[in-house]
Length: 75
Image (cartoon, rainbow, N blue to C red; front, side, top):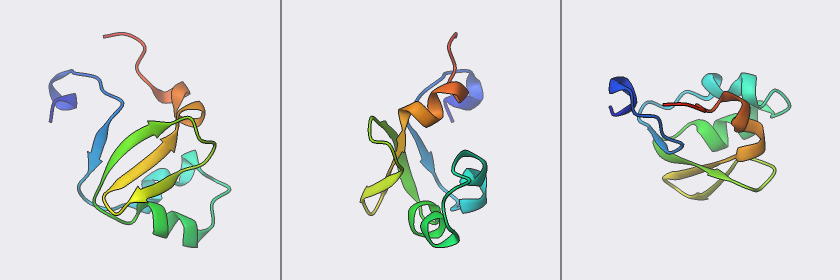
């Protein structure tokens, strides 16, 4: 909700699972990996690891190097 009113954040929550949203960011990922990682309700955080992962059932890590080009740089 805060993003909708203009706050920018690197941490979000996926409330409606949608693996297809992440396909453009991870084109090399198989259908199985996309489904396993992104087909869930989850908090999304950035990591320095080189790949997306699920360290907990309700948490997804996205590689900061991969996602940085899409991040807000100004408020």
